[in-house]
Amino acid sequence: MSCDKFEKLFIQESEDELLNHIQTCETCNLEYKKMLVTEKIIKESKPYFAAKKRSKVFVNIAASLALVVVTSTVFLNNSYTTKIAYDESVSTAAFPVDEYGLVDIQ
Image (cartoon, rainbow, N blue to C red; front, side, top):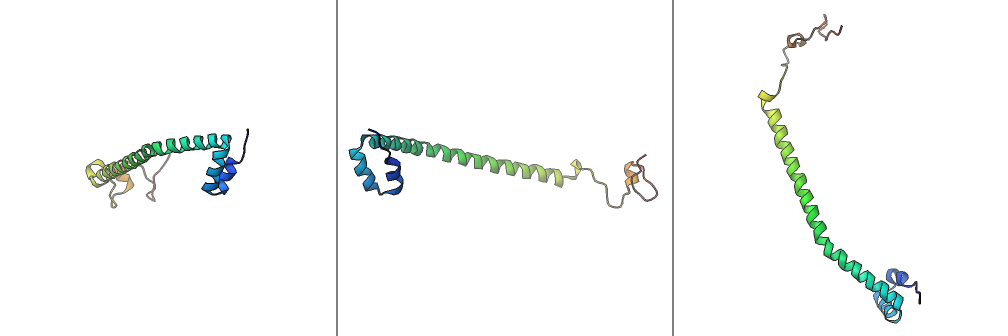
């Protein structure tokens, strides 16, 4: 026997009405058992996904901290960076300049 009431009862009606129908209809009883198995699988896999999400957050935090450390080391340690002081002209940096002080491109 084919019955298509399971979805309607599951979504729209109360649980008591669904259970009463399941006791009398073999097709809906089979669908209900499949639904229980699916629910069990989802509940069993939930801790795995929660742990995976926590580990992803941990990796993001560690990567952010590493980026902050590397960036601050590079910018705060003057021996690794080259600077042209504000009072130096571009010509002292070995670039040819015109009479206005702009880089001269020939």
